[in-house]
Amino acid sequence: MNALGYHLLIEFEGVDNQLLDDHKKISELLINAAVYAKATVVESVFHRFNPYGVSGVVVIAESHLSIHTWPEYGYAAIDVFTCGDDVDPSKCYEYLLKEMAPRKYRKELKKRGVGAVNSKRRIE
Image (cartoon, rainbow, N blue to C red):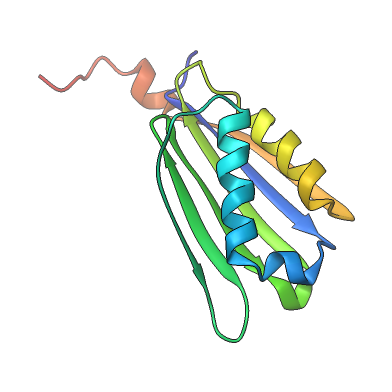
């Protein structure tokens, strides 16, 4: 790997409104996505907003997964950031795509820390 990690940006549109407002189900989906990708789940926190919407994060030993939902628009923004070579962020995407069944979706993969890896500077 010539980067410190990979950051997968995911946008789902046309997702069931009730699903996007169910903080317990959203929590379950993100944790299961991490497990499906063979990540090591450390901790998670999810919050349901009033009147609607969920935000949450699953901290994994390899970095994190996060989600923000807008049930009123059927929209979810999801980030999957993984470090190292052992966890494949596309596995998280595959799982969430199947389980959340959006009508439209986009994803973009970014390499993170490319300059840091190529730098000779290290913490001593």
